[in-house]
Image (cartoon, rainbow, N blue to C red):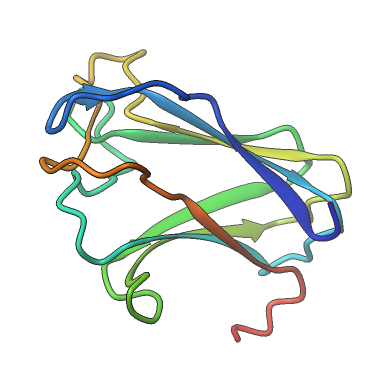
Length: 141
């Protein structure tokens, strides 16, 4: 497990362009300091909905929670990583730290407060990856 382990709860075919709810969980294998972060990167070629974090009744709303004694600050950056993994979701640890075994959960398309879900890309491919990178010491490398 080293730095951590990521899991997506969806393991079924998804209709292109549909709205979905997907639960992503990261379990820390190593402590992540205050200002350290997890970065989930996606292929630049995807036309999926842009994740948003402050309008829970609208499409593409994503909720972010943790069981740790800290806050997780999400930030979407459409050019946050190198090609072909250009699109990035940063999950920055604030006001504390994430200890070994603690979790961060992202519900992509959280429908609990009325969102239609997260719109998946409109073209088909065998896999859609949530590539996960970890910067436990806030080196920003």
